[in-house]
Length: 119
Image (cartoon, rainbow, N blue to C red; front, side):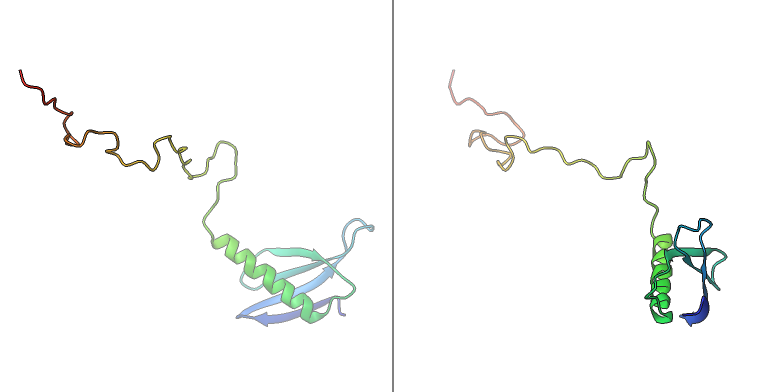
């Protein structure tokens, strides 16, 4: 396999090449650039089984996933930031019991029960 190659995908031009790591005891990396971006990326190490097709599919999958992560809403991650999730209160002992349970049958919901004794 060549140490570099280029290809087109979805109107983008990708240029891939192998670069050695600064330390000789570390495997080489696949680096790539893409025409729609100013950065260059090294998402994975080389593998003796690499082919142009396998590297192409990995590069495109990596870059498409990167674009999806960039487009997604920001998720809080730092100290002091809290999730927008509100804790659900624990159910009380009366959970599932109707609101008027225990009220006398002749009492209306807005007034207390009247005594029916005569004076």
